[in-house]
Each structure stands twice: as structure tokens, then as C-alpha cells.
Amino acid sequence: MSLVRRLYSSLRSQGIGATVFKLRALALDYLFDLKYGVETCSWSELHRLTVESDNKGRGYGYRPTRVLPLRLLFKSIRPMLAPGSVLLDIGSGKGRVLLVGSEFGFRAVRGVEFARELCQIAKRNIVRFRGKTGTPTEFEIIETDAAQYRIREDENVFILYNPFDDVILGRVLDNISASVRDHPRKVLLVYYNPKWKHIIENRRDYKRVREFNFSSFKFTLYSNNELLI
Image 1 (tube, rainbow, N blue to C red):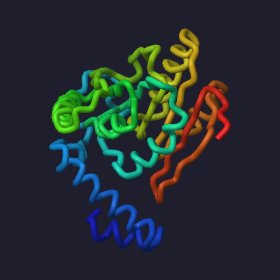
Image 2: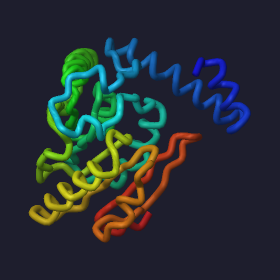
Image 3: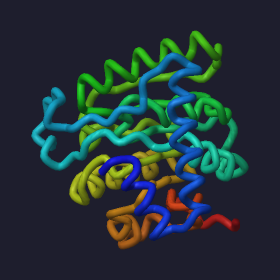
């Protein structure tokens, strides 16, 4: 859909306020890439990428999370974060979530991604971003299938932007739960545009604690502990 048609559709369905917010978010995405010399804006279709996993058919292509709502999200959850928190973006694509997350005090930010080309782009973006900002945050890109990734005991904040279907989401949740059983801690799980949220909400080990709606950008926050917010 062309930009003009998308704008027209947004004006009709969501009104001028939401449409202006979308335009601001779109402009900020390109300014972010220009400022830091990175490339996170362009979409990538999964069938064009190198993936050595039987679960390729269960994944979705790369669509970047907008910088503006991401910053609003991290600002909102920052008071809930324990000192030295570690962020894991599951299905991290070109690394935009990690770059933005480093602005909010995470000790480390890590990305799990099974598409080789996206991992390579993310690593280049990190080098350029660190060169521009001098951020002390530790970065790591792990090229692997999210369903096979063993959650580390220091990872306590997880974010997903519909990187895969309900089957893989269930396996990832199992992996997080197993890590929490072995190393008890409070974890936060952020689900952006929560297409398969019933998979999370049908489980006893996660509780929905808050929803954030920044114009039309929707994030649902879950925890393994009840939070008073």
C-alpha cells in the first residue's frame, strides 16, 4: 500500500491525532538511522533470507518496531526494572529494539535471531551505534532458533514483536518458565501487537499487568509476579 493510501486509510479509521503520531513516528525512524549511521528501516521478507532451521515456515518477516513508541514503552517500564536488568529481544531482526533499549539503563541487551543476514546487519548497526554514542551497555546478537535458545539466568526483560507463530511462542514461554524455575526471579514480558496473546494468558505462570497504547501502537506487559501498578 502506498504512503498516500495508508495515510488516507489512517485518517478515515483513526482520525487526525493518531495519523499525526504515525507520521512523527515514521519521520523519527529515518532520523534515527541517519543520526547513528545504522540501517533499521527497510523490511525484509523471510523467504529471501538464509535460515538454517526447520521452523523457518513458522516465522515472519522483519518489520521494525517504531522508535517513538519504543522509547515511550521503555520510559514507562523503567521504574519497574531491577538494577542491572538484561533485555532479550526474541526475533531481533536488525537490532533496533536493542539500540533503543540501550538508552534506558539496561546492563546488557541481547538479540536472538535465526536469519543470518539480519544478524549480520544488526552487528554492523551495533558497531556504528556504539561508535556514535559510546554507550556502556553490552550488546550481543545470537544467531539461533528462538525455540532452541536456552534462557540465561540474568535475562529478566523479554520483548517480542510477533516474530513467529503460536507454536514457537509456546516453546519460548516454556524456555523462559524453565529458566525462572531454575533461577527464581521476577521477569517482564512485553508483547507488541499481541496477535497470539491467548497463548500467554492461558498459562498460569504469567499475569497480564498492564497495556500500553501509544496511539495505534499496542504493547501488553506480562509478569510472572503480580505487580501493583
